[in-house]
Length: 81
Image (tube, rainbow, N blue to C red; front, side, top):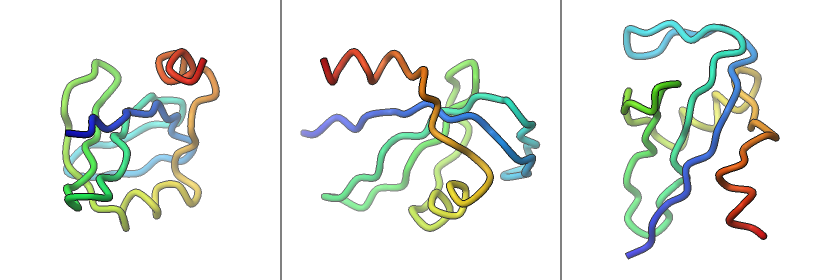
């Protein structure tokens, strides 16, 4: 069983999703896409609580001007060393 990595993102443009407003500079965490089973991606808040599941299409839309990957994502940088 493959364990999917969770990446840290910064909100760069306010948006509302699933009855929650995400503000600029807020941190969210998004699980990488499951290529094998096509399971939805999970979104976690700053407190690392599960907020919602999103489709790959929604994730791609968020990456087009609403969120950017956090370069200080030390959790995932340690895995690549």
